[in-house]
Amino acid sequence: MEKPQRKGDGQGGPTVILGLNTGHDAGACLLVNGQVVAVASEERFTRVKNDGARIPAEAVRYVLSEADRRPADVGALPLTMGFLPERYFVRETLYKEVERRVNRARKRAVGWVTGKYDEPMMMAGALAWRLRDRGKALADHFKLHRFRADTGFTGAEVSFVDHHYCHGLPAYYFSGWDRCGVITLDGVGDFGICHTQYVGEGGAYRPLHELNIFGVSAGDFYAWITRRLGFTVGRHEGKITGLAAMGRPEPLASKLRRCLFYSEAEGRLASEFEKAPRPFDARWAHINEAIHGQPMADVAAAAQQVLEDAVVPMVRAFVRKTGCARIGLSGGVFGNVKLNQRIMELPEVEEIFVFPAMMDTGNAVGAALEGLARTDPEAYRRGMGRISDLYWGPGFGMDYIGDLLKREPFTARRMDFPDLARTIARLIAGGKVVGVCQGRMEFGPRALGNRSILAAPTDPSINDTLNKRLDRSEFMPFAPSVLDGAAEDLFENVQKGRYTAKFMTVTFDVKPAWRDRVGAVVHVDGTARPQIVSEQDNPRYFRIIQEYEKISGIPAVLNTSFNVHEEPIICRPEEALTALRQGRVDALALEDYLVEPS
Image 1 (tube, rainbow, N blue to C red):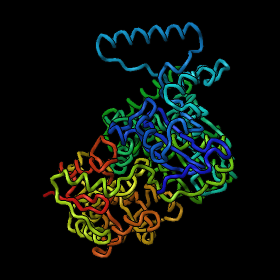
Image 2: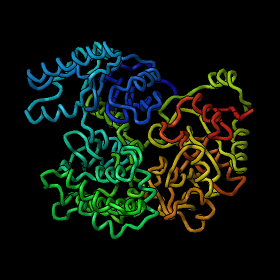
Image 3: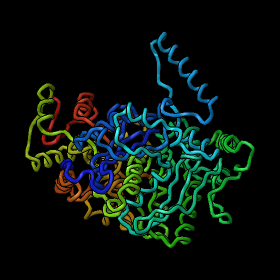
Image 4: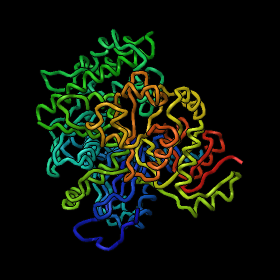
């Protein structure tokens, strides 16, 4: 991707827009002249999973460098209301402000003695909520001059953007539809909101419904199950989804349904515990009691069933109410690919699009789009359309890789890419595991062929062997990357999810004739979560799969993210080489180099 030129900057508003998510899964998105230039999550640079709770300095540095810009060039800086240093805020009362300064001085003094001082941070959204209840605005309590002086964003129009607005806007903007419905669902966002419904039409994005009733959140319900089964909230919910297919939902689902259901009378998600004096505690106590002593797989199956039984009728009612048969989905709950399939299969739904970075890091994109819609509406409307790929991260050229390999004790061969693709395909067909690090890094939670580990999709036993090599304990099988021309041959009901399946955001039923042939990428319930790959979107990856098909007759490869358990997906070639050194993969494709142990 060529870097945007400076020509035209300054015409028609602040053409350099930097959107930041400053909370969990921090990230940065840069738009120049209405075009996405670069997007990245902080974790990919710091190597700390889900890194956040501050300004994502490394991600900011990267996206600005990709466009050859400095902080002073940024015209608009929309921020999510996550964690920011306390020094940039004034509390709502003089007493609170004095108390904060005293506490900060005390912590700093202790830090001088101990050598450990972490600057106090403030959740901007929590302050905004308190201020709103007093009829005040967060912007009026933000020390803009100090923030600009410290960060170098001297010319930026700084604004704060709502969490769920940031979730939903990209699901409309990148849907490619002039009119559609948008639904967001997560644990909780700003002002206690856990669910919103919007209609997007003609570039306008208007709210219809929001839910901020305590003890009702669908995301919190699933998170509590995740935690109760011994997994990490915000990271391992996908394991619950995979485990669910191995259990029996009833009779436990009938008990858990008290915690989350769709109320047709009220037209919203509901819970029997929402009016309890302490709704969170009451709900949690009921879950604890209901699942005590139950098999893990049955608990997961019940939780998945309850989630689907609540959300699917809610979506059906929304479609009937609005007439929007095309639905955009975003927020952490829609990382649940099985739920997305159930929504897609509704007769009332014509097509779905799940914003690929549906979790919080994607809110950097939503913030940037909000800034574009507000400051340059013409560019916003002109740019609306479908995205062909998510290769928005760093890339590393052949010279860089060549110099790096000179210092490594591996056998490295530089090859013409057609020969390299054939070699990779032969290695995969021979039972080898090949890591791929090529082009620009993907944005979002899925590896889509540029930071992927590839293997043959034929042998189900590879689930155990490869998981051991990657220190994983997954319940889901690995996913297939499939040539676009073969998708309808392998899967049912593809057209309703073909676009969103470019990004591995929905499962499909695998046709019976293929279930044994690609057993390594089919779950026990007969579904798979494919990436549909076109030559136009990623010609190098398409060629690798095509060469594998010539050898095996199968138009798909097994694709899993290039990372070990509890680490982010790799970013740099150095991390790929570490994986080869540790035996995680048998061979490595670094751009046009094939690297193998000596």
